[in-house]
Image 1 (cartoon, helix red, strand yellow):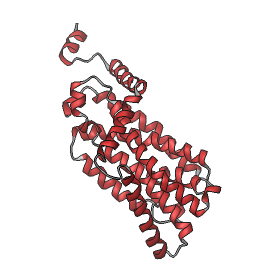
Image 2 (cartoon, rainbow, N blue to C red; image 1 turned 90 degrees about the vertical axis):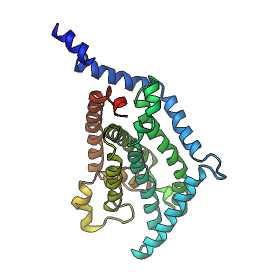
Image 3 (cartoon, helix red, strand yellow; image 1 turned 60 degrees about the horizontal axis):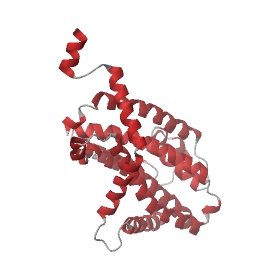
Image 4 (tube, helix red, strand yellow; image 1 turned 135 degrees about the horizontal axis):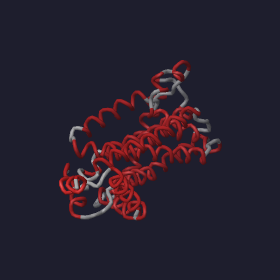
Length: 277
């Protein structure tokens, strides 16, 4: 009797039911991943509708940034351009994937508020939409990566399977972070500004523009910097090196623990997200 009254007042059937409903949301979103892809592709195309170059602006702007910073910092740090430019190019492209996905993740549910309130689409669909949209942008940037690797001759030494494995781990991590910040941002609208500040600060604390050497290799700035481990898992293999095994351990544990945390939070808040919006 007490259980029935509780269900009548709250609409809840217990923790296991909430977990099952969250799992069903995830499963339905994966079965219909094509919808998330269509939404992501539409976001990219609509952003450049009416533009002469279209999405090529993504490649052009990133290419100019890579060249500018590469030439400047190679002179400031007195490093050969052929050695430094690939490091900077890979750093900017893949660090941009990480931070841009996280930053845009803050608006995942806010931007989809009208669709969430009027349809029964799985909420995870919009998380995949954010991730896939940034992977499309990465596809444009890979033109720069390939060009730089060929120009520098590093393409002969690149370990692409290992780099692809690192990219999979990176995507697994930025997906759960995107889910977590999207829930927090739906409830507290100050979160996007906080997240943007953190990612901006992390860019200077992470070796994106500067190469860690000597004592810096074992500095706490790198050992306890998750952005460094995520970036190193992709960049080192593409430059013919091998990431520190610690990096794989860190991002592997991050993926498992992060998804457990994010999914638990989603389970607890799933029914409230639409009301937050």
